[in-house]
Amino acid sequence: MKIGDDLFVSKGSQSAEAAGKGASIKESAGGADFQQMLDKGIKAVNSAMLKADELSAKSAAGEPVGVAETMVAVAEADISFRFLLQVRNRALSAYEEIMRLQF
Image 1 (cartoon, rainbow, N blue to C red):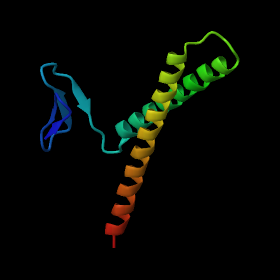
Image 2: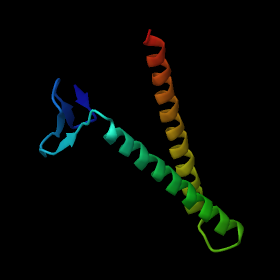
Image 3: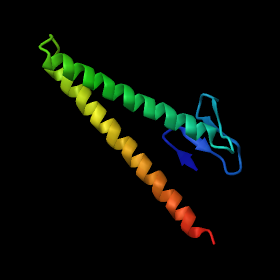
């Protein structure tokens, strides 16, 4: 099964190797890697939102901040938040589907 552009996971294996690099990605049964990935994503979105808020506040206060830089930061924060929201929606949908399958 192909994952991304250069990662391959063989069926039944516990690791994926990056093509040409020999790096392995550990998969855990408890989902700790997924939890870490989500935590990292949430922190990145929070950081982007704080940066956009800070630049917007500086711009509103009249400090010399580039309008383009502020708009890019706000757009980046918006896109990041929308993506995180979609990940949450998909995870919730998958959970609801699993709950419907159980008898």
